[in-house]
Length: 103
Image (cartoon, rainbow, N blue to C red):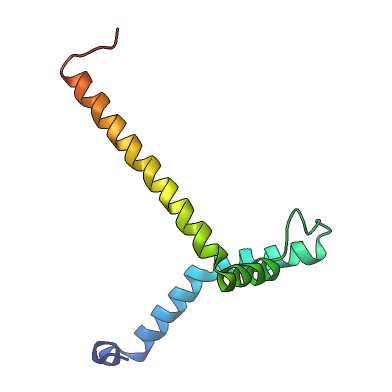
């Protein structure tokens, strides 16, 4: 704990902790509902896998390096697309501002 945090009264630290828990409550409830519906809701596991299955698959993909490789490839494609759209937008904007019309 930092010295600034130690200087705060205990009730202030308790209020901050409870506020943080309250902010995360919707995510916890969503994760719990997802797991319960996937396990007991009669939904096909191919349509809605449980959160624990998704987490296990994610860990396996990270261990294999496949998630990192595919993620980097996706980020590269997104970056190239963004760069192309910026270049095209700037060229069109400049041509419009100087009065050049294609037809």
